[in-house]
Image (cartoon, rainbow over all chains, first blue to last red; front, side):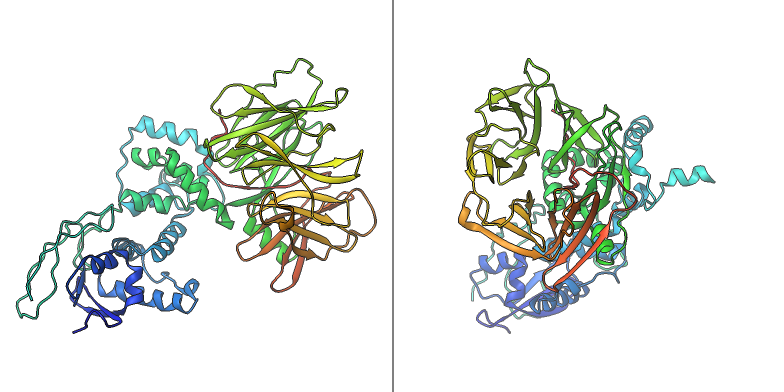
Length: 161
Length: 405
């Protein structure tokens, strides 16, 4: 069992895996840091809900790269959209500022130039405008929907059929 | 060791969880803890939770303006978010830190034509210039107003044009909104004025500064228009009597002009108007051996580009107002060559990795240059297809800020 004077903190993910991480890494997780600071008793193991072992693997990768000054080499390209969203939520829960910024930027990069329909599907949002309201908003910024590198909207695609 | 139950303060404001934890004592039986309802157990579970609004804001503030304008039609709460002042401020901060959100705009000064602006994003400018190929530009949609625009300055994504030395137009090209402000309350309409634009942090308001020259009386009257108010307010006259050619730059909470003292020293000096107390300060240039200087701003520092025959020296004032803090950043190896028209070489923009973008104007040519101090490389390119006398190019940042009063 790790004692509080050791340099390792035990974190237990939602799927039951225990990771022994350096105190410095645990410090980048403000959620975990708050737990450590509040507890009087020796901390043996901190459960981190909403975080799975595959998230921790990536978090540890990022930490190792940033300690070596190579944080720009960290990439989430291999994750699909849902996996990225899932990871973002985990990092948000842990309140890790730097990695959160990296991930929100990664999501923004994926959404740039995509159609409204694509973005709506990605965030799972219902359109709560009336058809008239929607048409008015579209019309007002119609120019924003045009551009060589802009993905066409679904309704525009349908009209071409 | 006694067990203690502790109420834990939620460390993340947007996710409050009432769960308690206790140290794990080595027993075989595990206690079942109440889990948050918005979690997934495995990757194969049905739909992932919706991202909370603070996460959505963090993502959206990194998107280009054109995209955000489209996303206003996603749903009502997104439309409200994108118009919210706090979001707009956050977006501006992210834009200013990103090379991708900066644009270079130039316009040919053809007196009898309408306003015609040509634009490219900074990453394209850098990559074309580094590979010495022509920088391609796209024509910007421009407000359909009368012609004869003269000098241009900008702040926070809003371009400020002086129209025919009389009135002022504010325009945000990213959101395609513009506004022509009321004329100055000056009886003689032939008076010539030039306009500058900046932001007053303390009152969180944008201000237009108008300098009107009265040659016979040897004075410059100064008036300020605060966006949100509806009139020009006169302040103290400028401590300088000659006509000011170029608009001032906005830097460090001031509007700052480069002026020429023809009477006593025959040198350039700097006048700065502080928005905070509406007072003026005179500043000296760094010790440059040349008279051909251009004023600019680099990364929030006042900047002087001083051209000699063989070099352009780029200086910044590290501490605004302190003459001793002038620091020579770079010496760019650009030969002016044959003495043609007054060279107007200027440092425009510096990237996060210290690559400097400059324009070079002599005779009738306009060239761009990127100077990379670390590698010592210097590459140049031309703007495509122009053959006229350009006004000073301007670098502006994308923003959602409205130019209207």
